[in-house]
Length: 160
Ligand code: ADP
Image (cartoon, rainbow, N blue to C red):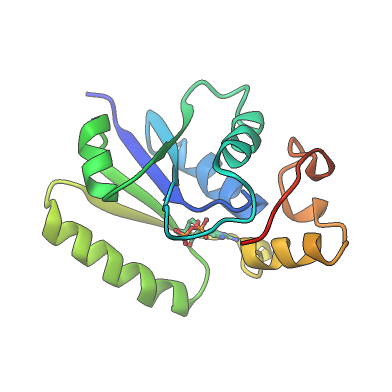
């Protein structure tokens, strides 16, 4: 049976940290669905469709990576897609504490979906979407923090 993992997140925007996790996880799974959480209550800087388009560009040459979005519980989405794994990246101890709680609750909700964590490479540890958004808002060049396939100048962000 195909090993499918869901990589859920806001990806506002997708960074080289996210890309690194997905590319390394391709060695563990047959298919990875990058699933942008569409939370009606949580405002985003880049619109949902823009975020999906950016991610699709990064993996245009990788048929084993799909891009989608979802609402509702991540575990329900996984079951729907036949995915037995949730992929997440860990940068710091703070990430670990946050992810531990989510993963343990997800496990309690649906025991047959396993969370799998990859530690980021050291050089990606300080990179997060909030900092990238702050650089863009302040008129700086954030291109070195996003995958080369994403041309930030082409996309307009809004208020988050
Ligand atoms: P969320 O809003 O769900 O935290 P994010 O888009 O911020 O969504 O992150 C999605 C996943 O990517 C999380 O598991 C997060 O820990 C991981 N991640 C974010 N930045 C990095 C990075 N620089 N290196 C490795 N993993 C990262």
